[in-house]
Length: 414
Image 1 (cartoon, rainbow, N blue to C red):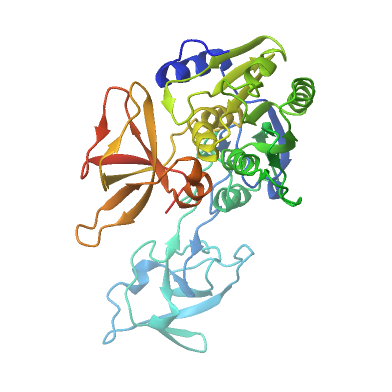
Image 2: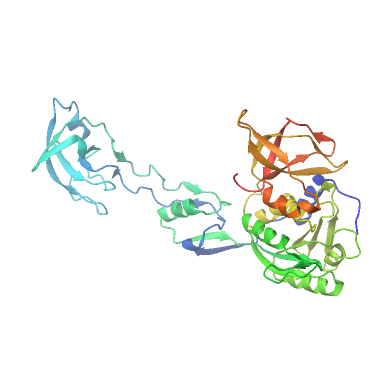
């Protein structure tokens, strides 16, 4: 079913134009259940944080003017008129020549405009001796200095982690409106594939792709549905793919996309509905036979069976689609600059992606990118060793040793 190979840039543009991904909808959920969910609207504060002027130290609330000129040789004496506790409004007003004991976090009483640290004082009964001059607003956190009423705190599209959830809690949010999580059914195909946990029979291999792809779906904001392993038998394959597609918002498959007699995925996916397959072959290495379809309103991405190829094409083509469907911006993968350890060649006429490991050159203090063998014998070790990949354009023959390159990372940090 191969048509004219599309360039990588043509394929990306066609995916965007045909799929036109967008968020699936919204829901309101308890804040404590919102970890890793994505805000569907800007979070705007409805109060000042802190909601009052508060002390940042243990000490005494004073009029700063009453302490001017105070030092070890010329201390100032004030009369203590009360105590301000945390969690309640002060019932006292600070008059000239007066001070009130206060603890960290307590509201500043009326009339006071500074706090003298307890370490700079000495108290005997109601008499407070101050040995350090205070300036107005010293040791005082002003009302609204952290968050102002009406201020946009978090933008729509922000994934909620511990810090973001803490911020939402700070201005009283018990619930939050988030985007729905897109679900992705993941199917591995091939008579040689069996699920981990089962006995490994002669001629069989364990399913790598479904597990790496399911995890990659989670990483970009989706929810994977493991739909199992399906043999290369036309009728059963169509039945299982149809079932998997009905259970999810997106379908991801691996294996069966090339041109062999058992490579039934392009034709089978196309038979699931309209408009059907619109990409069947891309001028890239690895991943040339990658197939993309739209069945109804649901995207289908079919990857090669080689584990590294499957995961790489997922990141290059499917990842941004899932991110947008999850309400996230379609962000590029994280990247670093490095220098090529040796000459790396491209596949003629194809955009070539070379998996690499990264290490620090102790002498130059530069990151060095060294190619990882991606042949058939390296299918598993490549996944384990690779830190990322670099890109060689179609019109370039190689990257030379010592050349600066951009390495796209397969994980957020090294």
